Image (cartoon, rainbow, N blue to C red; front, side):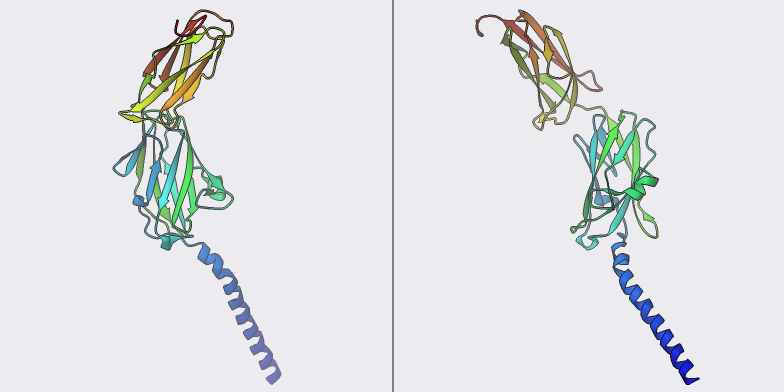
Length: 269
């Protein structure tokens, strides 16, 4: 009996030791799977050219092709998880979130995306922050969507914030309304986009050319960080006359025109 009792005690001790060993191995994984607590929309910002914050939401330009969802939390939340859900998305509006093999501070967990392309579970970096890029298609002035921030594993979520879209309030002007160029060569015209007195970056415009045009550099342009675009026109057949270049801001009636006057001989005469 004593031998059987010793064997039973030994088996129990071994089982308990194995259980503690398993717990010791599992604990780091449990620590990695923690979530933020008390999610707050004030930690979220939507960043894009011409974005305007309105209350708890934001209005983006209809020209928005990408925006960045920034989360700025506490360093105490470094390495923790959070999730943003987009919903009530207009029928023709497309939203695609950047993903990574596992949740990171720059990409959504692919497993979450596999089930719902509008849900993004991400992991905060060492500063308790994250930046997720979203691609947008089909934005119009009637398009809209909502988003909220949540944490787990016991779901705790914020109220909803709105994202709406508006036509760009951008003005456009030709830097020079008329330029001269030698027939048989090429010429360039320059335009500037403005929001009030400030340069308007990342604004798309369609390019139309009338008159002499053997080659045009682009049919659509995007303003640079200083609000400028350049359009090149070639006159390889050495024709005399004019080329009229008109830019129209996408989705609006806002336009500007510049004319190239093709001359022979020397410029200035």
